[in-house]
Image 1 (cartoon, rainbow, N blue to C red):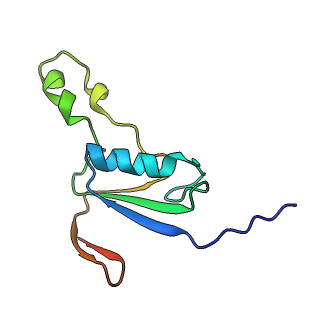
Image 2 (image 1 turned 180 degrees about the vertical axis):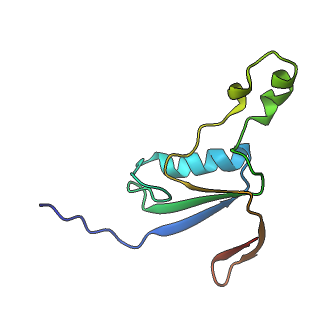
Length: 105
């Protein structure tokens, strides 16, 4: 059986669950697409997306067209970052750079 030595995982917190935050989380986790939640085996990153809205990220640009009936509602849903941990309805209120922590409520 082969053994793979992995160094310490680096944690990344993406604050903001909108289009840009979802895109960044997706890009950070895209390299390896490792199994599980919150950890990407290929990049060595543990990515968490924090957003204060209670629903999944969506494409706000197309929202007016959905409301006008031009597109179905599912068109605005953004693909989830497969291995990022997503915290919905959680607000980041402070970044403690010295302790490398995001303080949320």
